[in-house]
Image (cartoon, rainbow, N blue to C red; front, side, top):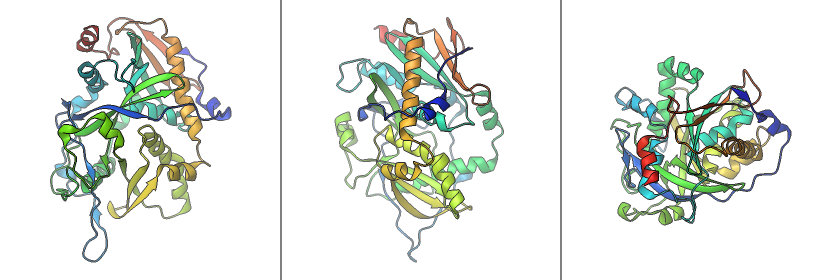
Length: 371
């Protein structure tokens, strides 16, 4: 591996103004089914439908219910890489950036961009990003680190339950119809998703990225057969979160230091301004749902992290990848970028030529692009 000059800590030390970025626009959508199959429709679009208090005026949502009968993602989901994005592009053509006139410079999932944005302030988590450049577009794909795989292998039931809490809370507050009560006794299906494709330009880099969307704020049902990108851009999407209720200032500070940065980056990238948060106790009981705004998250977190630093590092990383791969034009050549804060201060990179285990652009996609 070769050492680059991209050091996340330097981004903090040399703070720049917020990079120029256009407002993200939806250019397409798809759903993911129970078996993780690609569905080119809005079947899994959800509506925010907040639960009513009980007869005594109190709210009580037990996030533990149904844990034993949940339907988790199949293990095959780990092999998907960016296949769902590629299927969308094959079905809709390469020119799916805003304005529908140019190919994107980069294609990836939102989670990868969020990970990059959080890197300057995350001194514990490493990552691996794979990159392939073909027909002028650079495709980015995250790969789990050995440390992450080890953590998953050793995950306790308590940790699995905490992860389940988020899915169970979504079942209580998101419905298929704004006027229907959720069926909270049904098993939680962790595989299903509704994803939108967003286009933005970050300092002259056109980026196309997919993002799972929680739901929309609307009291009127929408004809799913008539949904298109233009309509989706007029709708008000929301994020749904659950977190432990803090009981002291240290816990509150920890939220704004470590978790709010992820929430802000995730919402900013898809232009979501409203977050609905279930406050739970240590037993997994939610007794209050509060609303937070994106501006509020930013304002209350400024003494712990800077949004401009987050966006700057993301832009600098993409610029590094573009510079390293400027002469590459092969779906089978993979550049691997590694960051391990425990071993090196800067990002490392290496090159793998020809078909190998890191290749992530499948032959069916290459054929689709060529045709």
